[in-house]
Amino acid sequence: MLGILQALFCFHQRYIELPKADSVQCDEKRPACSNCSSHRIECGYHDTAEPARSQTPESASERPCRSRHQNYRHAAGGPKHSFKLSKIQPPQTTQSTGIQSSLSSDLTSTISLADLQLLHHYTIDTYQTMTTSPDLQTMWQKTLVQWGIEFPYILHLILALSALHLAHEQPDLQEQYIQQADDHFSFGVRSVTSVFSELNADNCQRVYMSAVMICFIYLGRGPRPGEYLIFSDSGPAEWVVLMRGVRLIVTSHRAKVFCGVLEIRPNDQSRDLTAEMRDELHEHTIHTEAVKQLVERDITDDETRGRYLAVIENLFEIMREVYERRSAGSSGVDLMDLVMGWFYRLSEETIGSLERKKPHILVILAHWAVLLKYMDSAWFMDGWAEHMLSGISTYLHEDFRPWIEWPLKKVYRTRIE
Image (cartoon, rainbow, N blue to C red; front, top):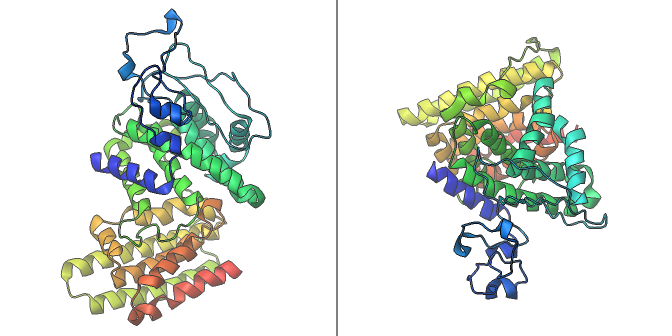
């Protein structure tokens, strides 16, 4: 688990440049530390008289230095928090101030109009884009928001997701909303990292949904240069780090995670294929079957060949289910569990082969990316299929380029249509 925490923290450091205030270290000098004073940051060590009722046995050296971007220390299962609108910022303010909370007995919180707008948008619109299941929509709209009110790190992730959705819907205000999303994500992911270390049966659902939202936020932030979901220019991919976190939670507390509001219900959609989907599946199968034959011909190592063939067989199964759901009218987020499930089940050895850009597994990945394209109607998946194929094309040896011509044509033709 320590490795996951370290990786998640490193992902956060790379993903978003932290506000400068957060990098200021308090030197604990009286009456106020010189670092905080020079950076004009409110200092937790400032030697001002406080009402006697608010003083606690906690020593000054134990109190955190509070900057404009205050770290949250919410242990799961600890004190619950309520929010009071003690200060509303003017409508013209575009910088989201976030929701600030304290563990002190005289809790005072603030929420900006910008954040109220994000919460409003989430509860009437964004939640509907995360799933089409009525039961799960209730969880995203009501349960998750209630958890967010009790545990602010969840609320920050909700607001980040809403801001990214608005950035996608309102391109003219994209920069403003992305900044808001980055601010909230910065708070949320750091707090989740600390809660992750205390994962247990009582908080596993909240931690799981936090990890899921972080994955959605990563996707919604859009493709990034050098990062191709399953591999990157430097080897390990940030997305893999996030999925390992989700896998760890599920592996250790599956029964507790998938019960109650998160109970998994069977998909009862029609299993019949329309004529159009039957033709598309046939085409996809023929090209993937050719890749299977390539693996059988080229890979001499029994262990590697067996692993690659197992990956292809699982891809065949997923393909069939994806085209069945598309026959029933499903697309976008409705395909998430199938398409991402294929990647979720990849072994560490296979992921390692992808990180090393082994040609045969890159060719297999290109044929999976065609399914990724069918998720484009979900706003957070827009552009990812093309981006992944561009990465595969960059690293694939020219001798193997003919093997990804069909995925390239299929993905870009689908975009045009």
